[in-house]
Image 1 (tube, one colour):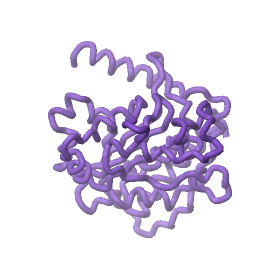
Image 2 (tube, rainbow, N blue to C red):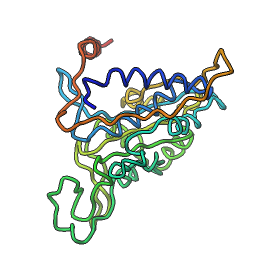
Image 3 (tube, rainbow, N blue to C red):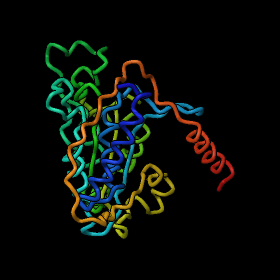
Image 4 (cartoon, rainbow, N blue to C red):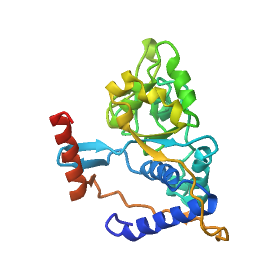
Length: 281
């Protein structure tokens, strides 16, 4: 399927997502967040978002905001249940790379989730596209990972540890900058700039967002990396709804696509934001 012919499929997938939200009493915004993370996880790491101002990786961070019991934790599982993505479709054995989202115990642990040991026969092939260094290579062809924290309190606790760098790793991952570190003896993992796909979601109760909204992180731009969505569940008007079928997400042919170009309205929005920054508003 080409990007040009996918408008109908995108429209149908959004309609299906809303129907799933109604049936499961979930937040459509929370479901959209997890569906977007899964979809962008499939975009090849070489393909970037292109505007007049340059290119940026399609790396994303989402914050699902809602009170206890709103359904933040269940929304990821709902997407897995009602949407079948190419990287988790049994019939596409060569694309089955999805192993689920992961919770990194620290900022330094994030790069290690991308890496696996290289077989001895490949140790001398340091020029391979999938190579990280002469000992490690990327997991899967797409160099992708999705990180998820079920409670923002866990992130707050991790960040409270002395010397924690979790916020800095999140910002670097979002921007596609070099990620990681190499210690003495070659230990550790360093991902080169724009060679990986990064996604993150966190579940956040409104009064527990200290990590994202303390003065230091506001000054450093951490909240600006996140898309905040309302995780309040959707209560259907009709309780006799039919269970939605599984929506099979079509495979996009990325072979001849070098970048995802911004639409005219997107360009206008970017220029407006930049103009506001230059004027100090």
